[in-house]
Length: 148
Image 1 (cartoon, rainbow, N blue to C red):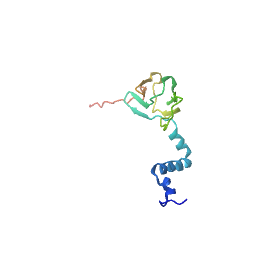
Image 2 (image 1 turned 90 degrees about the vertical axis):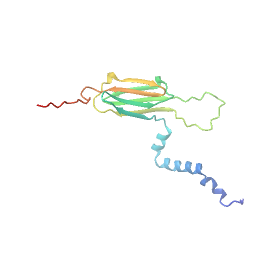
Image 3 (image 1 turned 60 degrees about the vertical axis):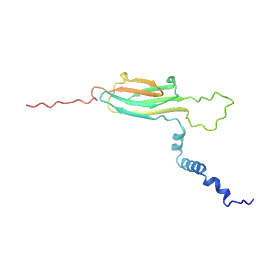
Image 4 (image 1 turned 135 degrees about the vertical axis):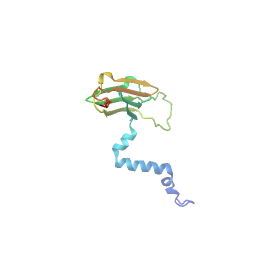
Protein backbone atom coordinates (compact mmCIF):
# COMPACT_ATOMS: atom_id res chain seq x y z
CA UNK A 1 0.00 0.00 0.00
CA UNK A 2 1.28 3.44 -0.89
CA UNK A 3 1.35 6.18 1.69
CA UNK A 4 1.12 9.89 1.18
CA UNK A 5 4.09 10.53 3.50
CA UNK A 6 7.38 9.18 2.20
CA UNK A 7 9.34 6.94 4.60
CA UNK A 8 6.29 6.48 6.88
CA UNK A 9 7.23 2.84 7.35
CA UNK A 10 10.55 3.94 8.92
CA UNK A 11 8.90 6.39 11.31
CA UNK A 12 9.06 4.08 14.34
CA UNK A 13 12.81 3.53 13.88
CA UNK A 14 13.50 7.26 13.98
CA UNK A 15 11.18 7.82 16.92
CA UNK A 16 13.33 8.61 19.99
CA UNK A 17 11.86 6.05 22.46
CA UNK A 18 12.07 3.26 19.89
CA UNK A 19 15.61 4.24 18.99
CA UNK A 20 16.68 4.17 22.65
CA UNK A 21 15.09 0.76 23.16
CA UNK A 22 16.94 -0.52 20.10
CA UNK A 23 20.18 1.01 21.40
CA UNK A 24 19.77 -0.64 24.84
CA UNK A 25 18.90 -4.00 23.31
CA UNK A 26 21.95 -3.83 21.02
CA UNK A 27 24.40 -3.19 23.87
CA UNK A 28 22.72 -5.62 26.28
CA UNK A 29 23.23 -8.38 23.74
CA UNK A 30 26.93 -7.50 23.51
CA UNK A 31 27.38 -7.49 27.30
CA UNK A 32 24.68 -9.61 28.97
CA UNK A 33 26.29 -9.33 32.42
CA UNK A 34 25.93 -5.55 32.40
CA UNK A 35 22.35 -5.85 31.22
CA UNK A 36 21.52 -8.25 34.05
CA UNK A 37 23.16 -5.97 36.60
CA UNK A 38 20.98 -3.09 35.40
CA UNK A 39 17.87 -5.24 35.62
CA UNK A 40 18.55 -6.74 39.05
CA UNK A 41 18.34 -5.25 42.50
CA UNK A 42 21.63 -3.62 43.50
CA UNK A 43 21.37 -1.08 46.33
CA UNK A 44 23.81 1.79 46.38
CA UNK A 45 26.33 1.93 49.25
CA UNK A 46 28.46 4.74 50.65
CA UNK A 47 31.66 3.79 52.46
CA UNK A 48 33.36 6.32 54.73
CA UNK A 49 35.91 6.33 57.51
CA UNK A 50 36.48 8.28 60.70
CA UNK A 51 39.31 7.93 63.21
CA UNK A 52 37.22 5.49 65.24
CA UNK A 53 34.96 3.70 62.74
CA UNK A 54 34.31 2.53 59.22
CA UNK A 55 30.77 3.47 58.19
CA UNK A 56 28.64 1.97 55.42
CA UNK A 57 25.28 3.37 54.42
CA UNK A 58 22.93 1.73 51.94
CA UNK A 59 19.62 2.76 50.39
CA UNK A 60 17.45 -0.32 50.93
CA UNK A 61 13.95 1.11 51.20
CA UNK A 62 11.26 -1.52 51.01
CA UNK A 63 13.44 -4.33 52.33
CA UNK A 64 12.24 -5.90 55.58
CA UNK A 65 14.91 -6.20 58.29
CA UNK A 66 14.19 -9.92 58.63
CA UNK A 67 15.20 -10.29 54.95
CA UNK A 68 18.72 -8.92 55.62
CA UNK A 69 21.78 -11.06 56.36
CA UNK A 70 24.97 -9.25 57.36
CA UNK A 71 28.22 -11.01 58.26
CA UNK A 72 31.94 -10.41 58.34
CA UNK A 73 34.72 -12.94 57.77
CA UNK A 74 38.43 -12.15 57.36
CA UNK A 75 37.73 -8.41 56.97
CA UNK A 76 35.19 -9.01 54.19
CA UNK A 77 31.75 -7.64 54.97
CA UNK A 78 28.89 -9.35 53.12
CA UNK A 79 25.41 -7.80 52.99
CA UNK A 80 22.61 -9.93 51.53
CA UNK A 81 18.97 -9.01 51.24
CA UNK A 82 15.73 -9.45 49.40
CA UNK A 83 13.00 -7.04 48.34
CA UNK A 84 9.80 -8.95 47.75
CA UNK A 85 7.36 -8.05 45.02
CA UNK A 86 4.24 -6.25 46.27
CA UNK A 87 1.54 -7.09 43.73
CA UNK A 88 -1.64 -7.41 45.78
CA UNK A 89 -4.31 -6.27 43.35
CA UNK A 90 -5.42 -9.00 40.98
CA UNK A 91 -7.36 -6.51 38.83
CA UNK A 92 -4.51 -4.00 38.69
CA UNK A 93 -2.99 -3.44 35.26
CA UNK A 94 0.61 -2.22 35.36
CA UNK A 95 1.70 0.08 32.54
CA UNK A 96 5.27 0.44 33.75
CA UNK A 97 7.30 -1.24 36.50
CA UNK A 98 10.64 0.38 37.32
CA UNK A 99 11.16 -0.65 40.93
CA UNK A 100 13.43 -3.66 41.26
CA UNK A 101 12.63 -6.77 43.26
CA UNK A 102 14.67 -9.82 44.11
CA UNK A 103 17.82 -10.66 46.02
CA UNK A 104 21.17 -8.93 46.18
CA UNK A 105 24.60 -9.64 47.62
CA UNK A 106 27.29 -7.00 48.12
CA UNK A 107 30.78 -7.65 49.50
CA UNK A 108 33.27 -5.11 50.83
CA UNK A 109 36.91 -5.66 51.74
CA UNK A 110 37.49 -3.64 54.88
CA UNK A 111 40.85 -1.95 55.39
CA UNK A 112 42.92 -3.22 58.32
CA UNK A 113 41.68 -5.02 61.40
CA UNK A 114 38.24 -4.25 62.75
CA UNK A 115 36.37 -5.24 65.91
CA UNK A 116 33.77 -7.59 64.45
CA UNK A 117 32.02 -8.01 67.79
CA UNK A 118 31.43 -4.25 68.04
CA UNK A 119 29.60 -3.76 64.73
CA UNK A 120 26.33 -1.85 65.03
CA UNK A 121 23.60 -1.98 62.38
CA UNK A 122 20.70 0.47 62.33
CA UNK A 123 17.85 0.88 59.86
CA UNK A 124 15.96 4.16 59.63
CA UNK A 125 13.92 5.76 56.84
CA UNK A 126 15.03 3.13 54.31
CA UNK A 127 18.75 3.58 55.03
CA UNK A 128 20.88 0.81 56.53
CA UNK A 129 23.85 2.13 58.51
CA UNK A 130 26.68 -0.15 59.60
CA UNK A 131 29.20 1.27 62.08
CA UNK A 132 32.32 -0.89 62.27
CA UNK A 133 34.80 0.03 65.02
CA UNK A 134 38.48 -0.09 64.14
CA UNK A 135 40.90 -2.17 66.18
CA UNK A 136 43.47 -0.27 68.24
CA UNK A 137 46.32 -1.15 65.86
CA UNK A 138 44.47 0.48 62.95
CA UNK A 139 43.56 3.75 64.62
CA UNK A 140 45.95 6.57 63.74
CA UNK A 141 48.22 7.41 66.62
CA UNK A 142 49.45 10.95 67.03
CA UNK A 143 53.12 11.11 67.95
CA UNK A 144 54.17 14.14 69.87
CA UNK A 145 57.56 15.60 69.04
CA UNK A 146 59.53 16.53 72.16
CA UNK A 147 62.03 19.30 72.15
CA UNK A 148 65.29 18.69 74.10
